[in-house]
Each structure stands twice: as C-alpha cells, then as structure tokens.
Image: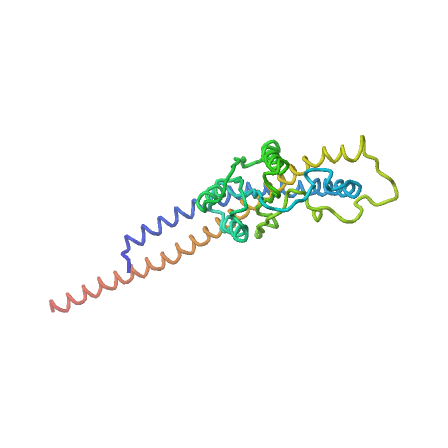
Length: 283
C-alpha cells in the first residue's frame, strides 16, 4: 500500500486536475450555448434557400450550370472540418473513422482545423490546402473555402466535392456526416412544390441569371452552416467530456481519501501494537 505521504500528494494532484477540468467545463458550456444558438438560427434561412432552388431547378437544365453538372467521379475533393484543440472526447476519432471507406488514391483533401491537418499529415494523405477558421466563424472566412472548392470543381481538377463534419443533433449527440457539396445533389432539395398555390412566380431578368447568382451563395452558405454545426458539436462534446473528467476526479479523490484513512488507521494500529508489546516486554 502507498504511504500516507504519497496518497496526500496524489489527492492534491487530482484535486488540482479537477479544478482545471471544472474551469474548462464552464468555459466550454459558455461557448456551447453561443455556438448552438448560431447553428440553430441559421437553419431556417438554409431551408428557404433550398426551397427557392427547388422552385427554379425543374425549369432549368441541370447541365446548363457547371455547379449542377454531374460527371464520372475519377478524382474527388474532401473538406474536413475538425477541431483546433483536443479534449473533446471521441469527436475527432469518430470523424476520421468515416474516411476508412474513402479511396485515398483517388482523393485530395482540404483541412479546416489543426486536428484534421495533423491526421492527414500522419496518414500521408494528399493534402492540397488548409484553412484556419476562427472560433466564431465569419462568412467571409468560409467564402474563401467555398471559392477554392468551386474553382477546383469547375476547372475539372476534381469531379466531386464532399464535406466531412460533425452534425450537431443535441448536447449529448454529434453525428459525423460525409455530405456531397458539389455537384449540388438533387436529394438536398425538396421534391414537393415549396410555394403552394396557383400563382406563377417570375424571376428577373430570368431563371438562369438568378440561378447563376444564387448557386455560389448556396454553396458558401452550406459550408457556413456546416462550420457552425461543427463548432456547436465541438463545444458540446468538450463540455460533456470535461464534466465527466471532473466527476471522475471527485470520485478518485473520495477513493484516495478512503485509502489514506485506511493507511492512517493501519499505521496507528501498528504503533499501538508496538507500544503494547514493549510494555509487556518490560514487565
């Protein structure tokens, strides 16, 4: 059994660690509330944007716009939204596990987040770019990533663009998603008429011009929404992980305190036995 001095040192060390994890839990909880609000607030606008595209798409030839044009996939680009810091539970591990079924030989990668960059470098995958994104992402930052992806797709360097990110479901659940960004998939758009009624809708100057203006914005906004989901997932996972670490630290302190009391009791008992034995020997 460890000595009482060793046990006291371990208790002090675990208590200090518990204070750190508690502080990180509080910080993550504050960031989580803000990130969750941003992720949820952007969904209605995303839904309206999809409905407008769904209204125009039946009257427009899919091959008339380069962002809608499908072709045989020989090379694909995968954008990975990961975290910059660790201590977020299994969030990044679950994310990278989705790449197991991806053919690395026919794929190139873009990293958004330091952990994704480290993973791609460690596994020696074909990394062609990495983009830093602030903790509170702004649309202009994401527009740079969107422009890069659209240039690669329209130039023919890649035949498909997919995004790997953590979809925010709730505080306790974050789902890794590998979604197609380009060409814009038809299944992402509502099939039913989004604007019910008998009225006709006119697009000025014409549907093609409106589509040319709205499609790049749609791609950028989809990336923007994915980043917000990834940030909400990150802070939620970190808050849960730090709460679990804090609870474990408290339990470990209790167990070590019990061991310390047992060691002290054993020491006292041993001393009493030695004193009693000495007295008997003197008599």
